[in-house]
Amino acid sequence: MEPTTLSTDRLVLRPFVLADEAEVYAAAQDPDIQRWTLVPSPYEREHAHTWVTETAPNGWRDGTALPFAVRLGAEGPLVASVGVHIHSAESYEVGYWAVKEHRGRGYMTEAVLAVARWAFTDLGIGRLEWRAEVGNTGSRAVAEKAGFRVEGLLRAGIIQRGTYRDCWVGALLPSDLGLPSRLPYLPAVSGGA
Image (spheres, one colour):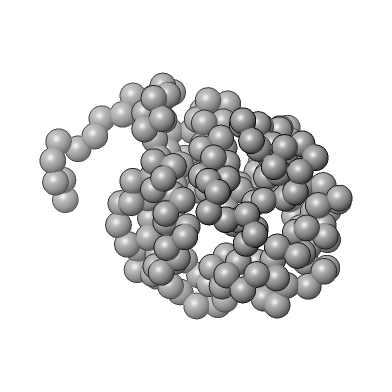
């Protein structure tokens, strides 16, 4: 997958680079990011270095994970990270975290929507899934503001720090954003089992 850059009125979303290392390290010191995401805990400087020099670039190269550094303008501070994880040809999941000092301003929702539109139009995906451990109300609020429909609770749906945990699951479809889908969608009539 060729790395790409996206932009919104306020944000620039681009692949991570070495220059992001210090800001990634600082952001990941936040106990909430360590609690609710899969970043290592404790988060060391070497984790940030490996992320920006190996993990993130390899995800783009292999087409397995497409992470974006979200900045307030081209030269502004790092405000978030958002990415699409590709589990299979028909399984795509969005993941994200926001820098503590930049929460509550709508940046995360704006970035998630930009990535979703890109995934639907440029990648041609038919469904973007979101999962978060039950209790992660911040992640759920962003997902719902972006238009994801919470579809239920998965028992033991994620692994967090070596433990299966229950998670919420939701999805966004191209039609939820007024976009065409590459394939037709035939929803269940009502209450299908």
